[in-house]
Image 1 (cartoon, helix red, strand yellow):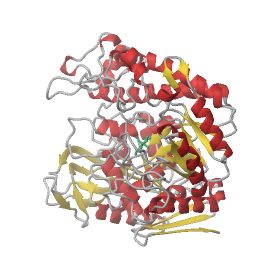
Image 2 (cartoon, protein in one colour):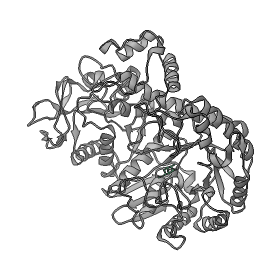
Image 3 (cartoon, rainbow, N blue to C red):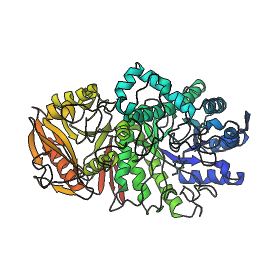
Image 4 (cartoon, rainbow, N blue to C red):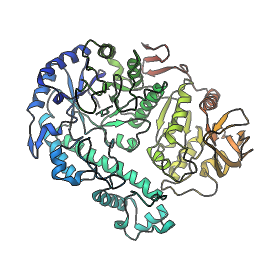
Length: 634
Ligand code: GLA
């Protein structure tokens, strides 16, 4: 739990990149801009442990005192994000090995294998020193473990990883036979007789891919083995500091998927996340809102903080467009409205050298007399003016959408009915269609119980491909007990080991609860659209199906499956369940959802370009066309 009763404002501070003369100037500019928190030491390992076991904390001691005297609090990093060159030179087994068996070298960042024993030992020793030294320092108010775990080498295929994967499988499966039947290894002679025969799913002969169960388990393992690293560091810190909260920054972005943040969020004291815009996308504020809502979903009642975003351009996209005047204020306040305990940035001062020298910062290369510094200073003042926002939670939405990294992992595999399926795109289209209809949404994991789901009038299930029997029963009970449900196509196709549920696709949920019998997939050509019988427009997907108790809303027409069910619904007494057997275009998805919301009396506020979000007594209205932000309190 964060101790502050104000909103946090500041960013990554990397004083080691600058001569000491600049530090005093940094403090002055931080104070002027209203900065109250900096993340310190994230990439400082090489500057702290200059050779094995030789630590130099003098520069860190000095800057910590300066910040403290300047009234600026510290999010203290553990500095383990990038091992120094001496370490990987002496212990090359620390380096990660990629899918093709190539060892990745030092010189970028994050060049370590999460399963490496040497990395663990060396990182633990460093964290011990840092925690021991700074735990009681009054300026330190939170801990920042490592940085963006899994950003650059989330999957390692080295021998140590293979061994750890086998150990992980031993714990997951009751026996090797259990693994064989879950993965279906009688296909292609993949049967294993002992766990130490199981390889990591790296490159296989051309045109073949590793077993689907093996692939998804390796993704689960990779998230778990990395989470172990976090827990190791956290537990060391906790021995020295029982007061300040410990976090690590997630990457809540549409196409980052390697870590299962629903699982990770259970282990942090508060959730922190980073978010960067696809600036070429004129509707990127909708993705931002989605990722903020998703982060609130991981946090599940815990506090959360936007730990890093950019004041203007990033430097890692093909074309790095600057933010337009006023955009940054809209972006930050959208995060705050959705529950963030402030707005933090990468980074305080724009680097003069190194890979990120063209990435924006709070103090740009051009200095203090700049649009960026002026705008962020205005934001600092705005956040300071409303400290009590931090005391409230964002109001619960009436609609919940199911989100799950494991679905992403399942659906990104090869050998699917069509390569055009995209879990993140479908989720984004569903989310955007709600956003543009003024409908707010919370995200929930498929492990949510019927009781938890019952807090929502409507639950949406976009492409929830795998469901365990228990999960299926919870969704079904939610609907039977008065909750309204929309199940999207290609949902509940498999159990959580990717074994297909037989006897009609969509399992009991689609076949029995809603009453649609789906027998065969008919993916569409990439450029093909179909007009459904109710006028809505479909793309990517159709299927051969028939009613099995549901009421037809629309069928496919002009297709190979004319007359098959595109949309159906079932009146369950006090609730309704819908099946959407296709991908709808954005406009059609909007019509479909706003019709349902109107039928269920769900409140809508805002417009297709302005969002209205409530956080306790605060009402935020952010208009992305008029470029205005209004914050009112009642
Ligand atoms: C993330 C990282 C930072 C920096 C930025 C660049 O936030 O944590 O170190 O690389 O991305 O956008």
